[in-house]
Amino acid sequence: MTMTAMRSWDAVLAVPRWTSMAVLMFMMASICYDAIMRYAFAAPTSWSLEINSFLLVYLAVIGAAEAQRHDAHIRITYFKDKLPLRLRATIDLATGLLGVVFCTILVWRGGIMALQALEHGERVSSSLGTPMVYPYALMPIGFAALGLQFLIDALTTLPRMMGSANDEAPSHD
Image (cartoon, rainbow, N blue to C red; front, side):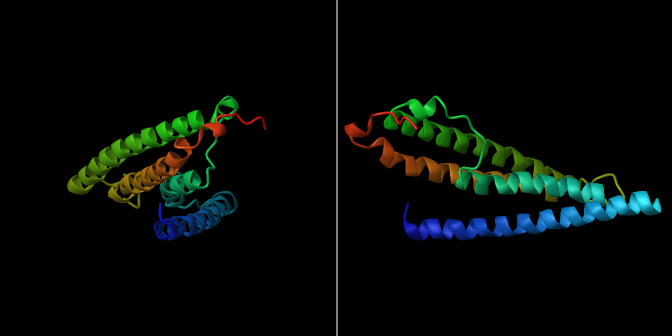
């Protein structure tokens, strides 16, 4: 990958990173507000649960690409770390390609779900009546970004697969 492309991708991922921080701050404030209104004044909000449920989906789906980019997803690598470099690179390539396939399916199905919600005018049955196209649209957007990050990971693994034979010794960290 070229450095310009990677810098551009970093700039693209900066948007969800900063919006996720803002969303988290809003969620914290609105949940505290709702708790105070509910228990101190016996007047709970009608919107807090609905909005925060959708924002939780936003945090999970939109933040996944950023977590993948920083290798921050939870994983157990005890046995993989004992393998030769080329085999580890092959596993990383397979993981990246499977991730791309998985994300492609979720983008496709999530897009269908969002389009159907838009066509049928689906809304949440609450006082806000939020159109469901918005939370459903998060799925294809988030998984498209995650799929692109998996593709970048797979492509950056290729040079490790082409490494020399003296790289074959497993690490003993």
